[in-house]
Length: 298
Image 1 (tube, helix red, strand yellow):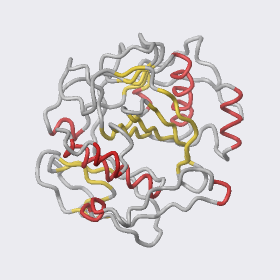
Image 2 (tube, one colour):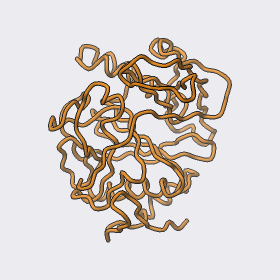
Image 3 (cartoon, rainbow, N blue to C red):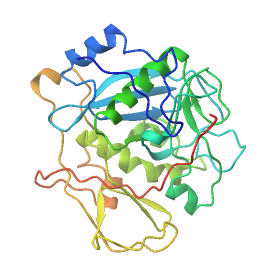
Image 4 (tube, rainbow, N blue to C red):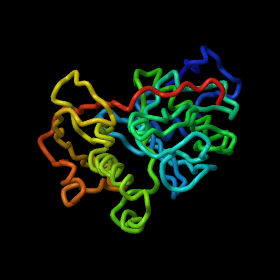
């Protein structure tokens, strides 16, 4: 499949010389895994493991792991970003649309992850121009090598040009297994991480992009407001909402070598959040995280 290299961004049309088609081995891997080069993507970031994962949607609607990339550099410690200049990389759920791609980046290539989102703003968190970018230097961003950001950027661009309105970034402090949660139980950010775990569990169980609502200064995963046009104050009381059925992912026979998703059925946290398994229904996606900050110079 031939993909035209066209950059659409808030910076206008511009194609730096180093934006090239994906390497042959990556294109071969996409084909081998039964994916398309312009199919939707999703990104997961794990700070403690220093890993960025790119997942691609296949024709069955589920996401499958395409590649994992080592994060070259990120600044700060485990925990969310709170203020401008704290040199802390964010954690949470973010979305990236076309105008967040920046081919004119001072750091080779970049895309704005969308910090602060509605959850961050509900807590008065400040800062802007938080990127995934190249140059392996970080002051609050997730920095990759130039070669890696070129590949990730092209995949993001192709997905957005292919019809995906935005892709999701799930940024976690670590892989949110029960063992890791127990390991960090005494951390001051544990209560915040409990907010993120239902999103992690949902994706592990379904391989679907979760719907994310923000109200009452909380993330609400896999739910929809009862009123289709509610007035939502991320820091205020939640309008009435209902949890959606969970369509559990069963790997097809050829995918049995991949890691199996974690079950939510025995998860006390999932039960507390109202996540339960129901009959298969069309996937429902909703975000109320708010618009991303512009990034003219990053």
